[in-house]
Image (cartoon, rainbow, N blue to C red; front, side, top):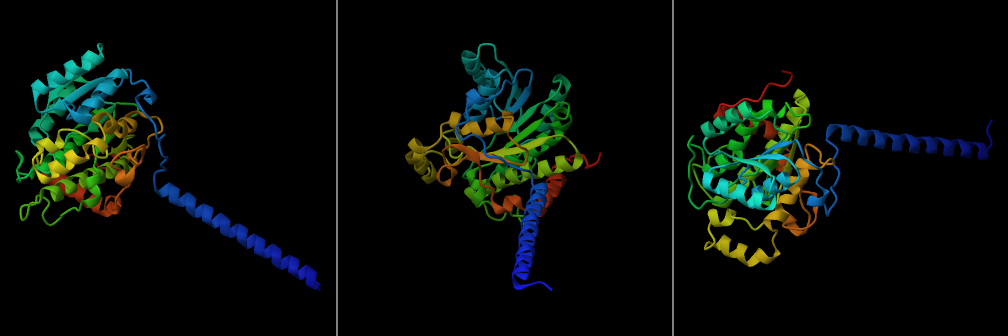
Length: 352
C-alpha cells in the first residue's frame, strides 16, 4: 500500500507525463500543418539590389518591361548579369527601353520581343519564337497590366480586356513556356498581383462582366485571379514534379503609368493618386518584391511578397497579406479549369 506522499508523487508524475504528451501532440500537429503548407520565412526588410545574387548565365522574360516596374526589373536583372527578354506591345518603346538600360548597363544582354497579351495568338507566337531561340528560361516575370479602363473593352479573342491582359494572357504564356522553363535547373515564375486583390471577387457567373461593368471591380478580380493562379501553379508543380517555383508579388502603390493609361489623371481616382503621390513607392521601390521573388536564395515557392507598411501601400519588404479568397484551393482549381477551357490551353496533367 502506498502512503499519502507516495500517492501524491504518482499523481504528479502522471500529470507530468500527460503534459508532455499534450505538448508532443501540439508539436506533432504543427509538424503536420507545416507539411501541408509550404514553409514561408520573411525576407530581410531592407533587402535591395546590392543583395541580389549574380544572375550571370540566367535567362529571364519580363512582360511589360518597357516602363514602370517591368523596366526596373529588366534593368536590375541585366545589371546582375542576366540575359533579359522584354516582351511588350510597342516595338518603339521597346527599343527606347533597351537604349535606356544600356546607358546605365553598357554590356547589358537585353532584347525586345513583341507580344500582345490580349491576343492569345500573339502570346503563342512569342512562345514559339522563344522556344526556338532560347536554350532555356530560368525566370518568367508576369508583370504587364492595365488598370481600371473607364469603358469595357474586349480582346482579340472576345474576353473583357483587363481580365484578358492581366490574367488570361499570362496564364497562357506560362503554360506555353513551361517546357522551356523546365530546362532550367531552378525555374521561377513570378506573377504580379496588387493590393486591389483584397477587394477582389471571382464573379464565376459573369467572369467577363458582360452584365455590368465597374472598372475597379474588374481590375480587382483580375489581380485576385493572378494571385490565385500563382498559388495554384505552385500546388500543381508540387503535384506534377515540374520542379518549378511559383511566387507572387505586389508593389504596394507605385508611381507608374498605370493610372494615366487607365482611368486617367483627370479622373477622381487620378486626382486622388496625384495627391497621394509623395507618399507612394517609386517604380524602383515597387520592383523590389518582384526582384526578391525572382532571385533571392531565401524566396520560396507559394509565397507572396510586398511592402509591409500601413495597408501595404509602401514600406519595408516582407510577406504580403494573402486574402482568404486567394487561399481557397477549390475556387482556384475551378478558375484554373475554366481558364483552360475558354483559352483552349492545357497545362500537362500531373504525373506526366
